[in-house]
Amino acid sequence: MINRYRLAVPFAAALAGSAFASGATADEINLYSARHYDSDERLYDAFTEQTGIEVNVLEGDSDQLIERIQREGVASPADVMMTVDAGRLWRAEQEGIFQSIESDVLAERLPDAMRHPEGKWFGFSQRARVIFYNRDNFDPSEISSYEDLADPRFEGKVCIRSSNNIYNQSLLASMIEHHGEEGAEEWAQGVVNNFARQPEGGDTDQIKGVASGECDLAVANHYYYVRLLDSEDAAEREAAEKVGILFPNQDGRGTHVNIGGAGVVASSQNRDNAIRFLEFLASDDAQAIFASGNNEFPVVDGIEKAPSLESWGDFEKDDINISILGENNPEAVRIFDRVGWR
Image (cartoon, rainbow, N blue to C red; front, side, top):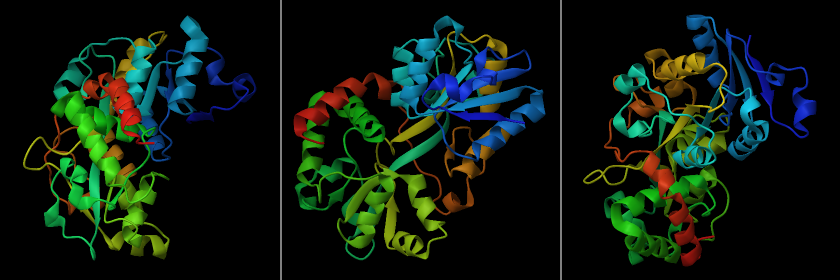
């Protein structure tokens, strides 16, 4: 049975007497997770079935989990921290949360771009940040890249989230890598000039903005669109059908992708079990669960994608190392501030 807790305040009241009051036993690991997908329970069940190692799960947002591990210090019961977006994993790394590990399994299974250069964290699922367009009002042949979003032709046509969103910060971090700071700032300013409205809401709201005609173009992670397509709400399905999807930069560096990832906590008392868990996340079984559970793209070649994604075919992905998205994050935030992207 999975012991699953959600982080609450006060921490002690929420977890008193739980598996997190002390370190996991030899047949357990303690996972601190900022992923909130019920489908991830299938990952934990499959790992336990294969290894006999139970998974105790503490859920919270990334900042909460980082703060908790820091407060617990060397006595932290955490063995693995899992979250989404390389920017968040980098922030955890900067706070000393992760230790370096070596694993022949991970080196063999995961592409170079999905592995931190020092083995501190790894990407196990991919999410593409793509462009959506209104099928009735916009000809998709007019745009092919992220760079095009800054073209003055699209003034008043672009919907996108605020700059405090980590997904946008990582997208801009990738632009810094490819165009330098000056080029990335010029792009960000161009996008601001093309806003159809001031940034508001989440990724789903940007897609709905395209469907309603409030904007012709939007940027969002691919799986939010799939959720609308598969929604039990007829109005959401109808909105999704008004929207087309475009994978940018297919004639160049490829589409920007981010990750769901994890690393072994520096103070782990069950390091070997923690490494086994990460190695399991790179297995065919786990990759298939990532793909079907949240319609994410596997990081391992040859894994069947979710049915909703199959019709899109394959696409070129930007293959810069995921650690760069974190390294460039501080400058991305400063650029956003300078250009007035709120």
